[in-house]
Structure formats: C-alpha cells, structure tokens
Image (tube, rainbow, N blue to C red; front, side, top):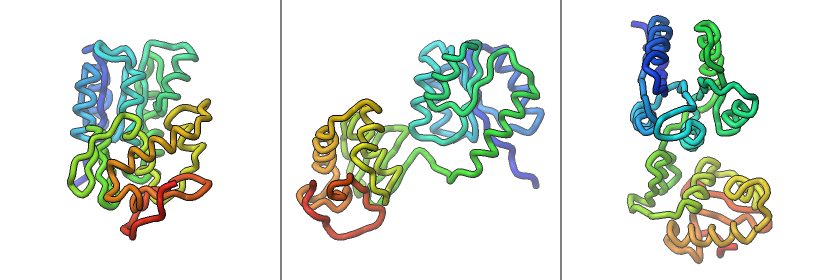
Length: 238
C-alpha cells in the first residue's frame, strides 16, 4: 500500500480558484484541506498540521501577511503565497513575513507543481516540529499560546510568551543579549535592560525559586540559556 500524498492546506476565498487548485492537486496525489478565511485556516492548520500551505493574501477577515506571520510563529511547513499583488514590494513583504515562495496570479499548473515539489523537498531536510514545545517540565503550546510548568498553567504577557518561545526553540543554546533584543524588540533595539526586566518577570512565573533559577540560566556577561535537561538550582539570577 502506497503512502498517502502530502497534505496541502489551500487558503483562498475565491471558490473558482479553490476548484482549480483542487482539480490540479488532487489528480496528482495531493490531499487537500480548504479554508476561505484566516480563522478557518488557523483552525485547520492547528488541527491537521498540513505539510504545505497555499495562501492567498486577500482574505476577507484578515490580511494574509498577518496570517503568515502567525503561522510561521509555530510551524515550519512551507508557505507558498498565491496572490494577484504582483509588485516587488508585495513579494518582499510576504517573504519577510515568513513565506517560502510567491506566485503571482494567474499562474500555470506546471509552475505551481514545481514550486510545491521544491518547497516540500526543502522541508524534508528540516527536523519536524509541531505546535507544542516540551522542554523538561515546560510545555509551550504555540498555537494556543498557553504555557504549563509540571502541569500547572502559567499566564504570561505577550512579551514574556515570545521570550519563552525563543528560549524553548533554542533549548540548550546560549542566546546573547543582542540576539534576544533583536528577536523580541526588533533590530533597532539597544535597551539591554528590557531583557533583564522581562527575564526576571518570566522567572518569577515559571521558576520554583526565582532566586535560584533551575530552568532559565544566566550565562554571565553573555546572555541566557533554557536548560534542556533536569538539573539542580542554578546560580542567583543575573
């Protein structure tokens, strides 16, 4: 028995375009999910974890660029934008938002299929990652934006969540102050105290003893590291 084909989520509000894509892809062995809105797309994406997404930018309830950023926050599945917006600026914005490729409407079936094959081939070279990160006693649900420590739910602010997500995605690695600033507050940020203040608040919520952290460790003069294995309490926070 042959393996099932890749699962593709089509996010497109125009029925005729969905019919075109359905005919082009299903006849070549792809399995399809279809969404007409960003809300439907997020529900299907988190529930079914598609192998690839075909995404229109002009959605009725939310801009496709915003949806792309949201999806890219928790999934590595390739995102190919299909849009009538053909300006170079639009393409750059989509790629900067996290899209892997961009096709301007109208496009040919063969070109679309070729782009899909390339995107899936690249994706297979990456380690799989679902919408939940588990590091030691921490469980970070990226889709629902929920955090639990040893089964206890912890409520974080949006910035604290982004900070913990960054640490969890890089568990075991030392992240410098400059790297954290750039990823959380943007490339122009130079206010190092922001990292210390928010890290202290994060520790207060997730550490059994914030004065002797055992999860988020300080690398003195360098940055921070999320411990990826059990260990004794660390040094006093820095």
